[in-house]
Image (cartoon, rainbow, N blue to C red):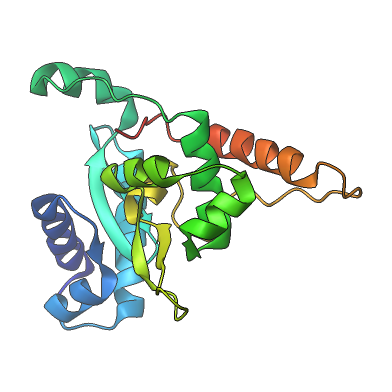
Length: 198
């Protein structure tokens, strides 16, 4: 089978799915090696993302997803009668930053860092599919562990957690948490792909 045929199949799978599709699943369907899938999908992604059109392909860790280009979001909202997404609050961004850089983490860890109850904020982020349960910690009470999702990567316009802005280094210990967290949130806001998570 020609490269073009493989890429056409991958494009069709991503379009039909509407959700991230793991490269291992694509490899299984096409009966080829995962390394070959990565090369084919990355080339296809470059082709789709640079041509004139309303669609793009994003890579999310070990998955690929087809979605619309952000510059057409307003027209899509109007056509589908979708209400404008509400931006994340400062509290939500703080919790998200703590989870993103330390995951998997418990609610107790998050609240220890922030110094306030975070139950409602965590549930809000779960409902927005930006974080999810990643299991339980093997301690008394077996507290839940939280981590980020593929939607988190997509909304912040990154392919993997390695692309998060680096944590700033501080020479002084005084107010280290507050200053560092503020800087991380600012960097994360700058890295967002123009999408406000609902």
